[in-house]
Image (cartoon, rainbow, N blue to C red; front, top):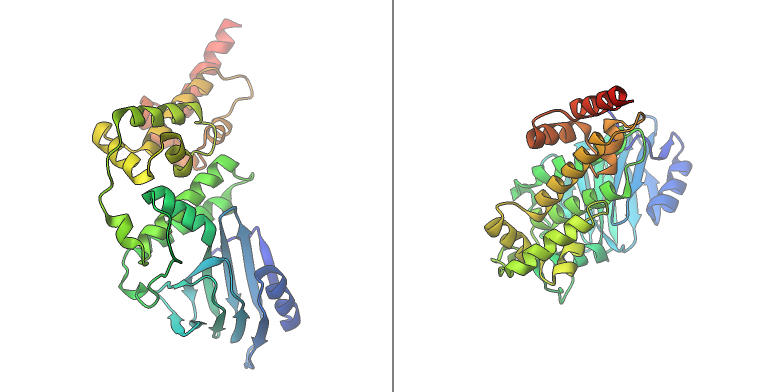
Length: 329
């Protein structure tokens, strides 16, 4: 099995002391204890931080106990192997297959991991989560988020969140060059929204309420904003701010009046500009460079969507354009 986030090694050691130092400096741990075991100690951690979320892979060959202070972010740990448990305040829950409880922010936490434990952790900035929720609903929460710890085993939607996280991590791992800021911002947005929708919390009911539709002129303004900013990281915050409405109201009105979402309109707009760039190709133009410039990080998905939109592969468009250029020179 490939190791997630292999490009961003934070810790890889047989030394308990080195592991302790890394966990304190990188992860902010207060204490680290490796309990006695018949097997040799080995710790491995990879860590990739984005603007509003971060991912971490952790593995320990022998049992360890780690104490963490209060944090400004939520954690959600996805099981990969072994067993463990978390204690946050008065709440205690296992880390096992099929569970991925949200660990509260602003509460000290103790983690007990047993032999050959492995996990992938999503960390979500609390301020970013509040901002995303307010953009979706148009409502500013009047108290802290309280996720329903202990109910993750009842939550079948967790699989979709894990697939999304795995996809993002895979894109980070397999990209030869750093992903453009435009791409990273929109991947973060997808994870944040999914995190809010999948995990039960004290404001979930507000996300389930039917939103109020916006006026036709506001739909047109949203389209004009997307057209003007297609090369920028287009987030639901930026669209909502331009229109003056909640994101859920905007999405509802797009579905009713256009039959698609604002993000689908953004994808279509970017495909149109990608085609324009391919048709105007110079001798050094490549499909990959055009796709990344236009906000597509996955070449396979780009090719599929491009063919569906224009009836040919992007490589065919590029070949024809270069052929015409040679013929006319």
